[in-house]
Structure formats: structure tokens, C-alpha cells
Length: 96
Image 1 (cartoon, rainbow, N blue to C red):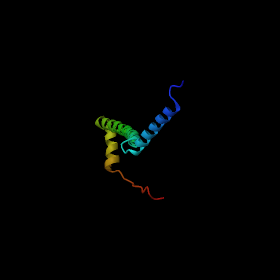
Image 2 (tube, rainbow, N blue to C red; image 1 turned 135 degrees about the vertical axis):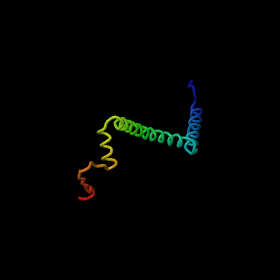
Image 3 (cartoon, helix red, strand yellow; image 1 turned 45 degrees about the vertical axis):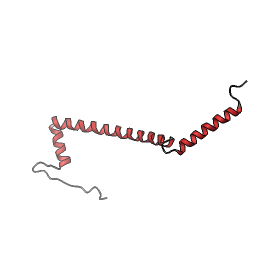
Image 4 (cartoon, rainbow, N blue to C red; image 1 turned 180 degrees about the vertical axis):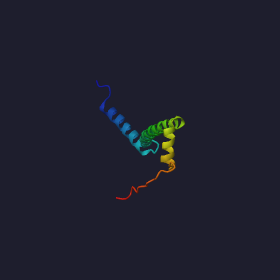
């Protein structure tokens, strides 16, 4: 004697299919859950990139606080400072 007869299995299968269809049709159902999972993965990637950026900025701040060469490099590269008597050549990177 089987635990469930064929008719009972068909009813349960129909109920499962109906619930799945309702979940797919409901904007707050399965589609929303899948969208939320994609958003979570995207935000985790963004957070990882931001954590790397923060770590790099912290290293730069530490260097600027204690390394005169780092301060000079920042002044030259980021602010365009030059020493007296230096000649600056600007190259057009867009030219062939």
C-alpha cells in the first residue's frame, strides 16, 4: 500500500505549481527575492572596492603625515607645484 495515492500526489503537485505561479506573479514574491539577491551581490562588490579605496587613502594619509618625499610627490602631482628653476614640459597625451 503506497503512502500517497496518485490522486493525492497530483493534488499536491497542482498546489505546488499554483503557489509557484502566484509567487512569480506577485511583485513581492520570487522576482523581488531574486532582485534583492542581485542587489546584495552588487553592493558587496561595491563595498569591497570602497574598502580597498579607503585602505589606499589611509596609507596615503599615513605617508603624508610622516614622509617628506610623499608630501613633495603629492604637491608635484596633485597640485602642480615645481621647484624654483625647474622647467616643466607638458605633453599632449591626446596627440598621435
